[in-house]
Length: 143
Image 1 (tube, rainbow, N blue to C red):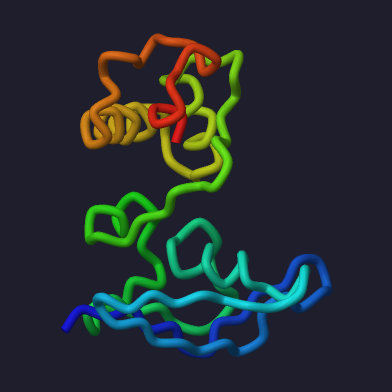
Image 2: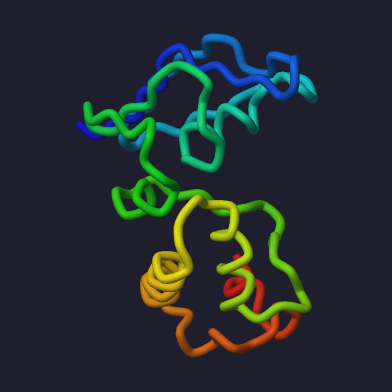
């Protein structure tokens, strides 16, 4: 049975510990919610599981495979997805430039960024809007 397991995840921002040794297990077909007050670490925990944020310590497993160091796109290829509640794009940049702007955060060379950008455009069937500006996209395309 497919499952996601988080073990002892920890994350701090500056000197503030926002997630301290959280563990959880989610099996295929389960619907799980994280409840807590603002600042409790719910979003950060979710981000560590999906690969948006790297944990300082702890592990994330998918189907018994350690994916802690996998980037978000590799996790997405395995079936772990994240759909932002609000579209988070730069409206005055093209789709291509939005993707490249995010990839600038990665410590990879320009050729690798372009390859990943091209792969993502194909994977999400967005090659036809690659040069379109963010403000001109439909809600689904923005996501």
